[in-house]
Image (cartoon, rainbow, N blue to C red; front, side, top):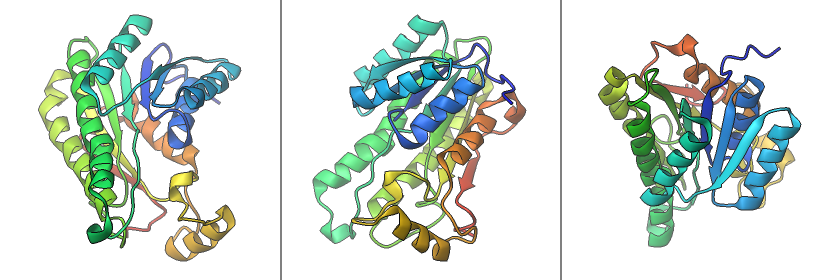
Length: 254
């Protein structure tokens, strides 16, 4: 049963067109929030909005490239214009480009850092500037990864470096802005039920067999489980949780 922890609050989710982002939009909706989903693909965002509305919630879509400062600034302005505040922001947009460092193209390297790192920096900057003017401040959750600060896997060095940067940005910003009432944390999922966790040419059944061997839990995390962790960090129950990086990977990094 919903507890309506976020009744009336305005929530922004980047990368909201699929996977964890879509699960977040639906989870916040179930708790009474009004949601803005952002991303680069209009069709996928519109599908998320329709799912939210079918569940009885309120959502709007904003096409946004998080690697562009003007796009992110306009996004935050759109949230506030529509709902009057920005109470929670989840910076979930991200991409994966794999391969050994010596074989990775410069374009792939730049794409990973433009979206995964610069995108989080620009989003946090715009979100913080708004939240620190609000009486009740706000909460920001960045979606990092168990790859990076917590774990290394061959062929993922660029992605891992970008996510380690997200964790570091989270901790630094959390320390800088908690005095302004802006509470910042991160979650670091391991493999979850999204296409990003599939290796090239791998089926879901093959992934399940692989993860059973790799994870102490014996399975991937559901997107709903990741969403529940984010909702906790965004909620009043986590009022004294500042700068944490909550790993959700079934014990893979232990």
